[in-house]
Amino acid sequence: MKINLDIDCTPQEARTLMGLPDVEKMQEVLMKELQKKMLENIGNMDAENMMKTWLPAGMQGFEQMQKMFWSQFSKGEDDKK
Image 1 (cartoon, one colour):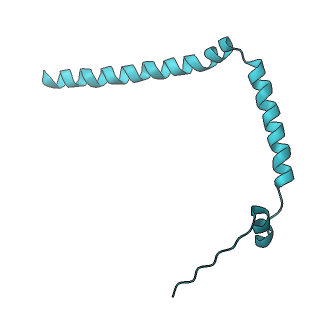
Image 2 (spheres, rainbow, N blue to C red):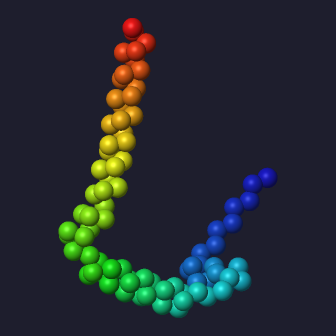
Image 3 (tube, rainbow, N blue to C red):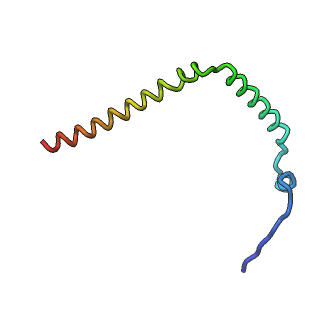
């Protein structure tokens, strides 16, 4: 036996039907605060500071990757000897 049940309702109506709390107002406030903080942080960062923040970690990771590759290549040469 197969039963299909289609319910046509809005998300708000579904939340009410399921007994979930209405958090729409709280989400709006939180999103406004998040947007405000993000805009403040973006305004404080200029291109030079962003590069100083991001580049050292990226270069360090790149150097580690190079060392890993070279160590693997040198192991292959040692095995041939």
